[in-house]
View 1 (tube, rainbow, N blue to C red):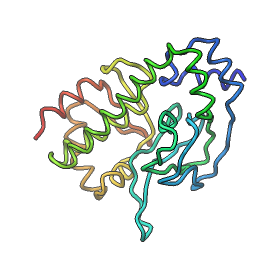
View 2 (tube, rainbow, N blue to C red):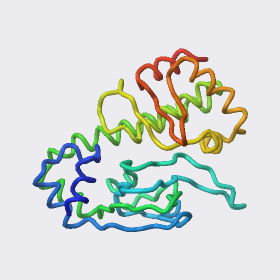
View 3 (cartoon, rainbow, N blue to C red):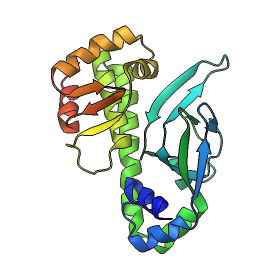
Length: 230
């Protein structure tokens, strides 16, 4: 239970709940293992659990009729997904697949909603976290339609940072697992094309790729840089 409690404690979505509520929540959680490539849930499914990554990575993705996969995000340890639990009956737009062998802590949606009714102070933080994610997603859509390649890549990095950031502070350093190849896949670009653009952002000392991870040194500075691009 102590390991589960520490995972719940590190999840920003649950940041409004006190220790008593989180300890109670450990009683309804379950830990599940997924092998690399195993489907966690499919697009259009009515996913009913909030998932927190305890180990490994998960890709949020969709595919067309011919099997071509589009990746929205690769999520690392500590990230959460499955926010449709707050809208029971709504189908998922994207699916989730284990990118590596991974372990998830799954919280049944009905159990979490029942607990939040008894500890309503948790709703304000949960709503804030979901709203931040929605804002980041809408910003990605807007930039994909209206802006150039460098702005699109910078925005996607900010989107991924938001999904991994455990702090409400927008001016913090965030580090997570990501390679140039995976970023190119997410953007629908070649590795060479993404690399050329990333050199500009790296030369401004805003990010660093190192041994399969990217570090954004200051999310507020990267945000200002992206806002200043065409």
